[in-house]
Image (cartoon, rainbow, N blue to C red; front, side):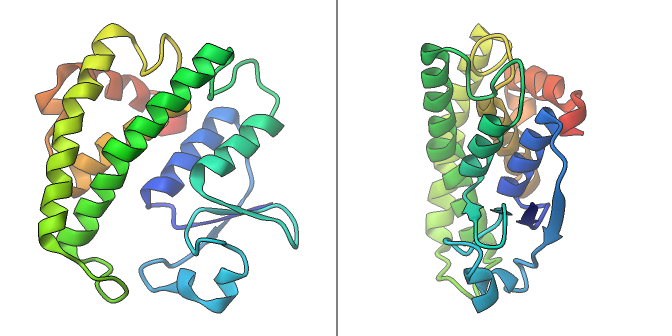
Length: 203
C-alpha cells in the first residue's frame, strides 16, 4: 500500500493528519507536482484526476480524492469512534460541515492562491481578479466558522472529526498563503486552532 503525495500540499496534509489520528502507517511516495510529475502518462495510470494524494492498494487498485481516501481508512481501520461521526445525525452534521468548509473555504482559498500567485501559470490560465474575488469569499466565510466555534469545542460537538481537520487546513492555508490574520481576528478560531495544534497528529 502506497500513498502518492506532495506532503506540503493542503489535501495531502489533510489525509496525513487523518491517518495520524487513526495510527495508520504506510509507504509514502513523493510526487513533484510543481515540476509536473503528476501530469505524466505514468501518473495518469494511477490517478483518475491526475492529482495528489492518490492511494495505491495493489497493482491495479488506486483511489484518488482526499476524502475518498479518508473514508476508505475510516471503514477499514478498527477504532472506537469514527472521524466521520458515530450516529446518523452526527454523520450528517459532519458531512454537512465538511462540505461547507470545502466549498465555502478551501476551494475559494485554493483558487485565490493559484490565480493571485500564478504558481501554476505554466499549465493553467491564471486570472488575478478572480483570485482576489475568491479571497474575498474566504474572508466572508470565516465569521461563520468563528460563530460555530462559539457553540462547541470542535466544529461538530465535543469531539474531533474530519470537519475539524479540513477547517484546520483552511486556517493554516489562509495564514501561510493568503496572508489573512485569521487567529488574530477571531479568538474562537485561535483557541480551537491551538487545541488541535497540540495534538500529536497535527504536529
